[in-house]
Length: 393
Image 1 (tube, one colour):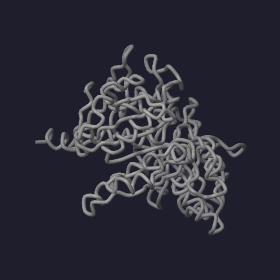
Image 2: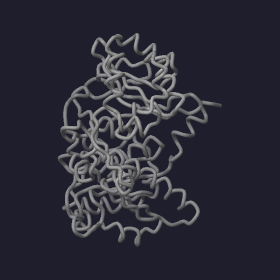
Image 3: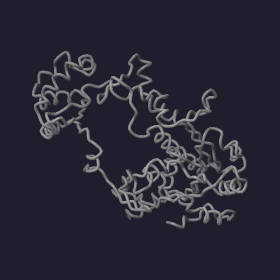
Image 4: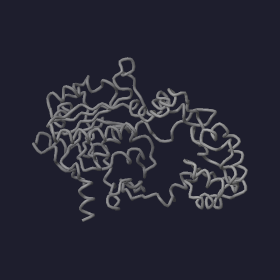
């Protein structure tokens, strides 16, 4: 029964066809999630391929980004400036439930694939336009990549050390945009099941990460400006990284008066600090953070990492270590599964979603460039084109 429920979950979108003219990260992330939910995803690539295929060769000779984002999709190469290939895309869209694109602003419109026009022709179609900055006239035309948007959105300004802004270490704007688009597509599919009508979804990297910036923006409006604090929380103290005697850093967090009292008594062995006027509540601790850090460092520098972790555990406080990537690879919580590729295999992070305690499988084939072109062209025009299974599955 559990296996049946997990299987139903991974096939929730079976019979749904997604056609995506996509590249890089944001749109592929969205369609990867749709593929994991059972949709048939037809990835339309230029003859030279999605440029993310060339980002690196770290995944057994293939791009780590591409392997992560394109498992279980079909790949067809189309040159949309050629009439025959443009006609092929039209036929694919005619049989699709969802059409996704994240080319440069206006590129597909100029080629005759305006989303609004497509929905007029195919009222049940759900279109998804992913852009850098949305439709604000002054900047809608600009190309945008993740780091650019991290900077434009102010995210880099509140990230990094006190001395300099920093980049979030993963493509967070792309990922947030892809996540937002995925959720919107699911809403649109549910809505269409009631109304029979598709809709036009538009998501931008800037809008999606600006949503994540809501708290610092509201704090700024209220007179509290977020400042870069490295591995410290800007508005909660103590909440950050402190070095043990052996140099390894431990991060811990105090969220309420009970935890503050336990830190003082169990970890610092200074119960009187709990009622010290300088540190009696979070606002006071923020105002006297330097003095508080001096006290904490004075205790922590006498304890090695294991002993410090044991004290924090005894106090029932939230804590963790500042791990390297090497330490992440051996982390007790990390779940991985084997992904077979053309020239070998890689260990891929397992699906973060579990159903009834069961990990959902992710390791579906990664398409070679144009691997499905011939098969897809053969099926174009059939009434069942949208429901033809990937022959490589």
